[in-house]
Length: 108
Image (tube, rainbow, N blue to C red):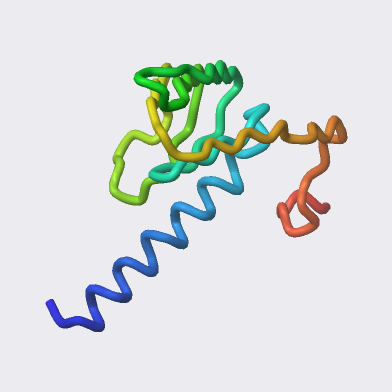
């Protein structure tokens, strides 16, 4: 496999992952970013804790999707992350309007 083949493969995998994210994002309530991963989740429990004078975060996600190109199963029931790094949690805005794309092929 050449370097170009490998680069094309990785680019294709990232594009597939982005498309999957775009398709599933509306199923979730929160976007969660840690230093190692990006998640979509429907329940987030973030606890700031202290040990030996250092603050760390204990993060539990339920009903989640993981942005990871190398995972075969990105939907997970439960995730627990413990980190000393920043954690960003954002609530997604739900769009209650259900509409089909114009190019859905349903026109008669």
